[in-house]
Length: 199
Image (cartoon, rainbow, N blue to C red; front, side, top):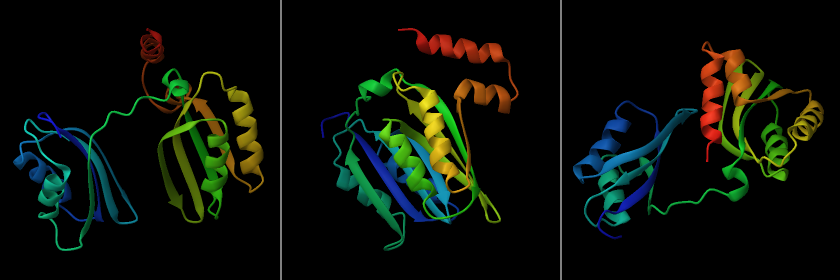
């Protein structure tokens, strides 16, 4: 890696207090600046992906070792790679953001049916979360839909596919979702859309 090197790291570990402190301390003590981060906890497991820039040449194994020293033996799974910019897929670069909500009785195959339907249309899942209420489950997905994909066709296919196993679903443009689910002025949403449409 050249001077001014940058890495991307992924860490998986059983959740406990102090994990973020341990990771950020390891990177900061190496002189790194964390410039991108996303973390979540699922079923008691903590996972985080982050990017960090270093002013000096630094190889990924050195970063991995520094992070690993903050954890017990075999406690964490750590992957560190050189950061390589990922170009946006051309069809998605001008895509529209939508929110998908799927709800009903929890059962095997929900995600397979949903993701197969989306992938067949070239729709990218940007974020995905879910919550349980007894035997009921609700999934919320943030999607990027290519501009040339008829959203009505996607909605009908989702309703048909998921309806076969008694699931309900709604697919809404993010501005409509936010306007009906969040408190805030519609004018600001419209302005955000106009700004995003600017070349």
